[in-house]
Length: 128
Image (cartoon, rainbow, N blue to C red; front, top):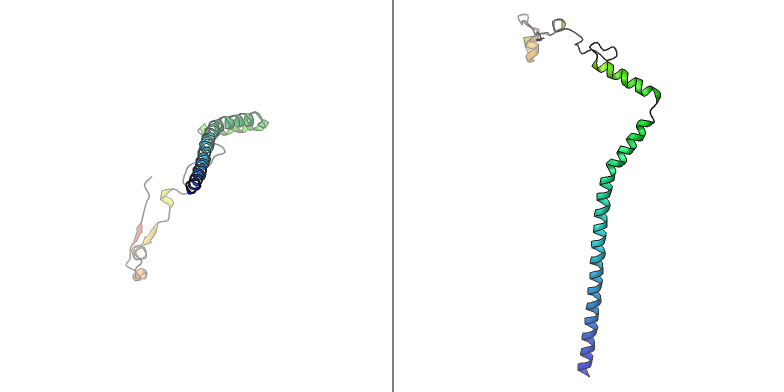
C-alpha cells in the first residue's frame, strides 16, 4: 500500500513536470514567433518609410500654388546674379579707415593712471 501511494505521488509529480514542460515549450514557441513577427514588421516599416515619404513629396509638388514657380525662378536668378537686387550686399558698414579704434595704453591695461597726460593714444588699423 505504501508503495502504491508512493507510485501515485511520483506519477502526479511526473504529470506536473510534463505539464510544466509543455507550458514552457508553448511559451518559447509564441515568444520566438512574436520576436520574428516584430522583426519582420520593423524591417517592413523601415523599408516603406522612404517610399511613403517620396510619394508624399511628389503629391505635394503637384499641388503647388501658381506663384511658387515664379518665386523660385526669381530667387534662383537673385542668387546667381552678379548684382543682386534683393539680397544685402556683402560689404562692411564702415570701411577700416573710418573705424574709431583709438584708446590710451592705461585705459587698455586697466591702470589707475588712466588720467595721466603722458599716456599716448594707440591707433589700430584693420588690414583689408
